Picture: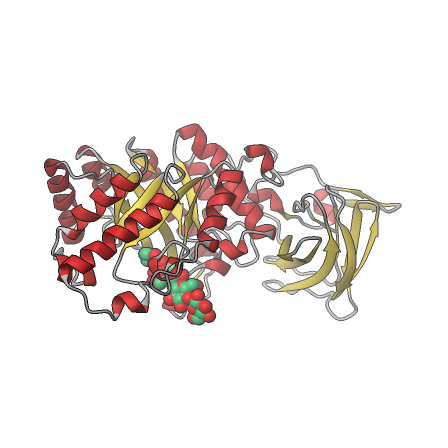
Length: 458
Ligand code: G3I
């Protein structure tokens, strides 16, 4: 399984590297001599998590699982959650007319890469199809719709998914039940009925109730606690609770670990299912460092409790995060920036999972990403960014490991000799100010695989 993963370079080695004088990089007679790997001991997050028996997952968008996005998703995470692809509106937009394409794509990708899948989500008040939301249903019809939906979707993936978020967000902040299509039509027992239907459709999947603002001990998490206790007492199949953990910088609940432990003591698993920590934009380096400390705190809390299954981040890159759309002016909430460079939060997660990463301290870095990829070609981009230094000209180089061939470049002059590529600035973009960046792009061909090379900035 794992051999199908393209590339095996941990995130901290994807971005590279600084000036020739500092790293020993040199171009001699067209031969690229790259710096010694500064992070050779780094391991992908998934290997660290596997060693601890924990999940490290990410929400993903199926259509993006190619290029650098797909490579990082496969390399760093041992579990995937479809961010939207398994929601009712996605899979049955018109009654009786199903679209499984994106959900199937994610499950297939996960299986090809030896990853678990967390199904998300079956019974929710949001992202339901209009025909369901706008319909008028008797209780019997509504029950039938719900249980048929569960049977169809869970049944489709029977035996292939590790976990299902069966019921999503059933509570209000004060611990009363949220007034939804399901609660209003069926009463609070819709939750037990949904869990029972899911167990029948796939006896091997772990069944969860998932909610937000239930990370610390509070009225909402206590309502969830009481519900789980009562469901267990009645013999209703409930295996775990999901704490979404959409957090705000500076507001990680101090009772997080205590709360995880009290659910574990009820005899259920706990998972952090949708972790992100949002910051008022623009995020400065002190805020990113604080965010890293808070990611570490969350992962530490899970690692400390045996029944905490693991942590899933709600998108691994700031370019694929729901935050800026929903909270204008906030963002930078995930462990990778918009150009796929790992942020301090990435290194904090690695360390909390037992890794020993050293964040790059270089003042200027070059980041290579595949921004689009099709059957035989791709578009790549390199971003050169400085923080603590400035450049008046630049040259980057890399060596392709799988026969890729550049056919065209823009905003730089690129030459390729064998596997070795060198690119230097165009006349108009040699200057990279302290705190600024430039990018250049290129098209290339590939076959077999298209791994991201280590880029050297000289
Ligand atoms: O697919 C359409 C696209 O065709 C259209 O062009 C575009 C225009 O806005 O919208 C696209 O749909 C968006 C969808 O995400 C897919 O990108 C919706 O507008 C947007 O509302 C939707 O947001 C999702 C949100 O749930 C809805 O509540 C986020 O991506 C998704 O990350 C988020 O996830 C939820 C979890 O399921 C439950 N917990 C909270 C979490 C954050 O809201």
